[in-house]
Amino acid sequence: MAKFDFQVTEYAIDGARFAVVASRFNAAISNALLEGAVTTLAEHGVPEDHVTVVQVPGAFEIPITAKRLAASGRYEAIIALGAVVRGETPHFDYVAGECAGGVRRVALAEDVPVIFGVLTTDTEEQARARAGGSEGNKGREAALAGLEMVTLLRRLED
Image 1: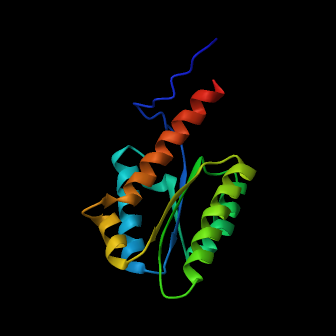
Image 2: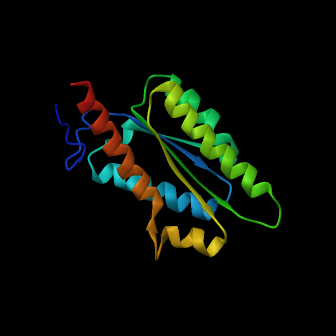
C-alpha cells in the first residue's frame, strides 16, 4: 500500500493565486483578520498581485462571492473572513450556519479549497481576542491553511 505523507512542512505555491473574501460587518474585527491573512500570504512569498481581496456586506454574502471567485478558475484557494457575534436573537444561528454551510458547498462543488476563517463567537471580546488579541489572529491561521491546501492538492495531482 502506498503511503502519502499528508504533513506539509514546506509550501509549494509558485504561481498560486489566492482570493480573500472579507465581510465588512464587524469591520474592526474583519479588518484585523484581513490584515493577518494578507500579511501572512506576503510573508510566505505570495506576490501582492496574486492576492485578490473582495469585501462583502456581511458573512451571509460570503458563499456566493466565494462561488463566483472559485468558478472563475483564477484562484487555487479562497479565504473567507468575517465575524458573527451572538446577539439576543436567533439571527446568529442563521447567519453563522448558512455561511459555514455555503462555504463548504462551494469548496466541494468547485473543487477549490475555501478556508473558513469566519469567527463565530458569543461576545465581541472573544472575537477581538481571535483577531490579533490574546488568542492570535485567525486570519493568519486561515491564510496558513490556504497555503497548506494549495501545496497538498498540488502534491495529490502528481
